[in-house]
Length: 373
Image 1 (cartoon, rainbow, N blue to C red):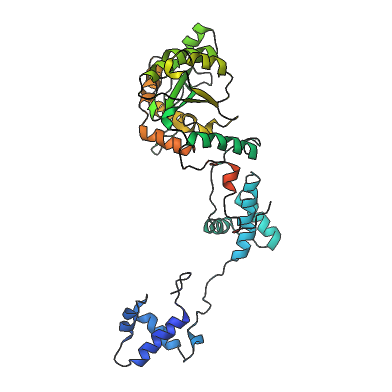
Image 2: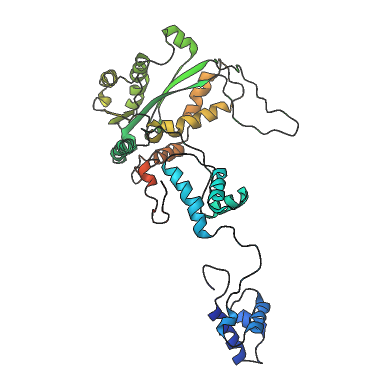
């Protein structure tokens, strides 16, 4: 049988019929079908026998009835696959409705959306959620700077690297979805449903697969300090009073600290704070490229997201319980999830340094399609 088709080759059919004729009348169609492992049993062999006139041409596959494809494979590649690839290269969105218009314009054919979708699916086209990026973020320079930092981090044990960042949760947050019975409403009770709900800030860090203690700042704490959010002094307090003492209890001492370019990350102040502790004096601070935290830091991609989802599962967050819930759920982070997010960020040895970059997209085999762009 041809590997590219569910139909048998004419030469194979001829060999089956000749075998039957040579052993007639001792063999039946059923025996021959079983001997050659033919799908369709004796009826298939009988049909071949009835068609056979002594030539191989009589056994060749004939045109079958049924509606033919509106577009052939070459047209599918030209009007669907190549057009979509071209838009992907230019970082532009495209929908099947636009492809239908293009097909009608070029071929004058009226083709349904379902048919175009079927052709696209057959060629491996998928509908995916778009990822927003600025032109600078997807530039080659940005990709190279991210890959350079990843290359450095891949050659260092995760136990030697501290990732530190800030995040927050509002008191009105709740699970995004719920199951709803027929005739019921998807309501959920929250303490405050306005966009001005109280915000609780958190500074947290992770080293290797170890979650370190965090610090929570409530609206009352910020009011006492007369600040609207986390500033550099609050970050230094966290480093001196929580981060460094926690690391001192570990069996290993980190040698790198990875930070983003937040305005509160004053490098000189952070180095001074770290220098007050013996095990942190030699720590080198690595700063991530602009807007690269979600592609390098396991906190941003996406330990914080997973942590927030767990906090949201608690019914009706309140000012009395939110800080405790945030702390408890932070320590409930699973070790295997931490390892997964390190891999996802491309900072463990053997991972693609150009993950989620324009260069990784160019690794696709260009010989398959002639891209339009």
